[in-house]
Length: 551
Image (tube, rainbow, N blue to C red; front, side, top):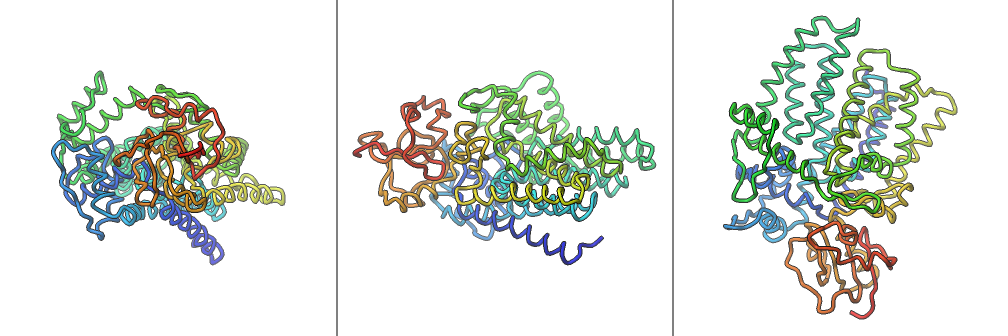
């Protein structure tokens, strides 16, 4: 059924609303930590066929971002002997080229992909439960703070969410009418997702669960067993082909001259060794898997409710869900759980979509909760499209009476209004009232939940507004204060530009990144512990500002 003019108008309006928020983010957010690497690595991959800069992740997302740079023809500095990866990236982005247009262009392909993700949600929900469900899915996506925050950044997060959703939809489409063509599409979609982020493989066990459930139903498609063997064959052909294509048919070895090779033992190492021996997938892909396994074993320093830990917390994902989502979205999830429990889906296609979505979301949350790399709610981003789909599909079960319409209106207002209100301060730093809003978020979560190096433009705007000519700056990130005209002396931090230490530290106007203030960089010790004991005099974006007397 084609949309009528009213529905089409609402779809266009919602897509434009999302596009406007993404465009605002592109223009107003500074460079985030990971973007420096991905933008630089992506361009070397496309322009030079050199895949050495980012061996820890699959290459598709950086290559996608680099598509925006091809027309710019940026200058590519030589890779000097002994030069580190991040120093070369700094030279490429900040020294040899103008970082502003470079970063903006790299973000555009990701923003377009985010819009396509929202449209896929609309189309899938509409096909399952009608125009109302489709519009609900599009509305929830258009104003979801995390999709807006990460949907314009040149990182792996939004592309992984989009391609994971595409792979799940392609499997569901195959399950409706199994055949060779649809099997190849599903397999290719999974390959694209796996070439974007290794966590996209969660689609495979989720699909197996749904497939086994479908095989037990009376109304299953005829010949499902034989078709499943065909799907397995398609996966064996298409997924490796896509992975080889993502690496440009290069079998790039681990860049031992730039990074220490990962060390993995046990059964995982034996399996990866067998894959390497068979040359089924590029060696660079299995090397990235080895790194992720080693990183997961060693852990990463995280922060939750004032505590720092390398081993993670079982409650991290649930806390992140509770404080980084709008009240409207949380109400929508609660309503969906209630509606689906009272009225389980009877249609096989609807039941398969709900089962697939719930299983993928559960796997994502379980992986983050049990893992040791808890450095951002963005690791839940792959689950959010499926939670949105579940909420939208539950809409018909809520009813259409006066009270139901009032409830839906309340949910809509409590979802869209907080996200739009967060835009001036940056949607990446959004926290709801459970965390105390923007000013209370650092008491609950840090790292890419709040402070990802993105707020130098807002610091510069605050300095102009407050007529502050110079600051002492403690910054963690990969952006450069000089490109925003920030006059500063450098306190202890984690950055790539040459530091200019002050003659008298901690004097005058002192500005500190939240991650540094809370001691989230172990190698620095805890130089800002005394500042944590006092109330900041102001906030400049996410930065804490202290006026400490003569400077």
